[in-house]
Amino acid sequence: MRYKYILFLVLLAGAVAASAQDNRTEVDPQVQAAASKEKALKRKVAIARFSNETQYGKGIFYDKENDPMAKQALDILSTRLASTGKFLLLERSDLDKALGEAQGSNADYKKIGADYIIIGSITQFGRKNTGDVGVFSNAKTQLVEAAVSLRLIDVSTGQIIYSEEAKGSAEMKSKTTMGVGGTADFDATLSDKAISAAISQLTENIINNCLDRPWKAYFLTIDEGTIYISGGKSQGINVDDVFTVKEKGKSVKNPQTGMTVELPGKVVGKIKITLTGGDSAEAEVAVVEFIEGRIDEDKLANYYIVENK
Image (cartoon, rainbow, N blue to C red):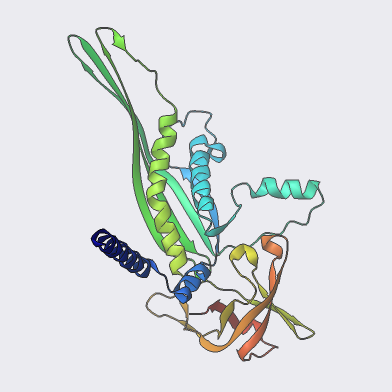
């Protein structure tokens, strides 16, 4: 009887502990639902150019338009930005080739306007070999160092909203002792790794600066009572999403800088997405309905759409 009582206490304690553990790990369904709906609307970004400003590899037959190192850096940056899934990355560097293909296939190619453009350059690049020769051993280090500069420009204002330079390096070591060990010629992939390391340091800052700026969409037309706006699924817009409609603020000239500044817009209503369509980024549209407020249908250009905060 005594053993049964002890066993009962042990089982009871285990049940209480399991219940406490369940309470600690339980998630509020409303919080979980809100987290699952959280998203970031994609900005349209184009890399306008990437140049090689160093003297490396510039011989008598150097072609600035086909600099292999500049194209390499552009491809690395494009791949990094595209892999984040946070942008609509638009082609600019090889746009003439895309247009040529479109003309050859009778396709109707339309150039999409970017929200932000990136201008980049390789500002430093160098290779260095160092060695350490001993009585019984021989060590060799191959080192490549690169510096990359990027500027992020807001197309709507022409302002540089982010500018920074980063440095990256890559090295390879080989060592022989008493004639035993590995030796290696220069590794060409070290150049890729050094440039990639520099670009990696800047990618996150580009993402943060773009996403910190307000996302915007615009009214396209009203056809027989149906309201169309720019944007669609590729930008993260889905049916039942709600957005805020603002009327553009007055444009004034800042006498200090000489630049035209648009004053903050005024909230005039809210819209809900009822339908999305289009098979490509440039052809995407969304159909909306007003759930609050209204606009002057004859002056659609005076309004813009932002995320609902």
